[in-house]
Image (tube, rainbow, N blue to C red; front, side, top):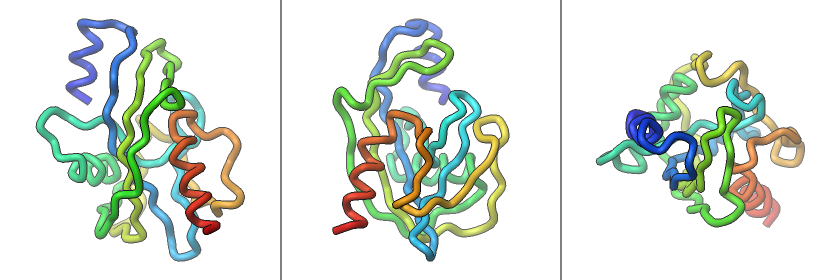
Length: 151
């Protein structure tokens, strides 16, 4: 997040474009790995901002490893999400218009080692019983995931 921190030093809380990489990790029972965020006390998934010069795929793997301890094996592009539904104002006042590049994996390696600076817990949820308090910028991709699982 060095790039975003540098921008924030100059722009304060003003709205910015935030390009991020996100990973939907499904286990053998087709349950989605979700993490309880410490910043907004809502459920999220592994992911975060892409650094300057970083490949999107590398950012997805890095963020997942930093937040969960897992290494991501095989993953596929799930979708790119942007537009009005991706605006978010963080509890600290930072405003972003997210562009989220989402990957899907069923191949996590290692063991859970949650990063307590960003998350306070984790759980695997069935797609038909996801929690209500999901971080708003995830919702367009979550809806598509649910729709694709029912097809």
